[in-house]
Length: 267
DNA sequence: GCGATCCTGGCC
DNA sequence: GGCCAGGATCGC
Image 1 (cartoon, helix red, strand yellow):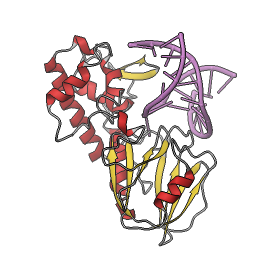
Image 2 (spheres, protein in one colour):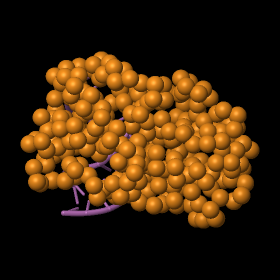
Image 3 (tube, chains in turn yellow, cyan, brown):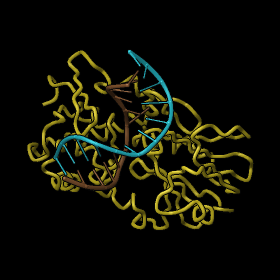
Image 4 (spheres, rainbow, N blue to C red):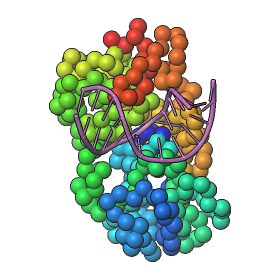
């Protein structure tokens, strides 16, 4: 469900937990913990305060006093919700962090495509997921030639497929990949090797703009996306192609995923 | 590179 | 019952 804009909005919405001390935890028996254990997570977090929230691609990082980070991916169906007061645990809750003031953070993920992991290094090189990620769309240290080089190393990929590859540019999902290609007026089926550097630059600019707009509209709520306080996004009202059959927009399938585009505009 | 697969739920 | 879903990985 959540792509970069949704994760960024969730991150901003949860600033309320910064400074809170973690007093206890709940993990379901099906919690999607990867390459670590509930025990290790408890040991790492217990008694410590949340130092801040960060984001890398679609991963949300809960930064812990002392330098460790709890690395969360929400997959297709994950939500991270803050509750101020006691409350019945809802179905598919896989992790809860109880703060010393009685409030809590709940991870709810019916499909369990998300992941929970740990990282202790600033650069994420010790984390199976973070280590694979490509550039941030707004990386201040990356130049156009860096983005171009990343794309050029996958000449045979269709543009849409390249956008979904988190090792090239991190954070785009199915909605924003389709929207960025529309904004750049590029056919999602064209291969990387068939587009010019100029067209790639146009695509990068479209990616930045598309993700920025997504964040400003507080994410896309097609079905069930909400931020950390259960507030829906508004971007669904401004999508140009995704889910918009008709008026020249068609749906095709690439890599087993739906691609929505407008053949008259995108070439 | 492509298709199948993990999982649950909603909709037709 | 079948199809679809905002993700990512793993075979071939």
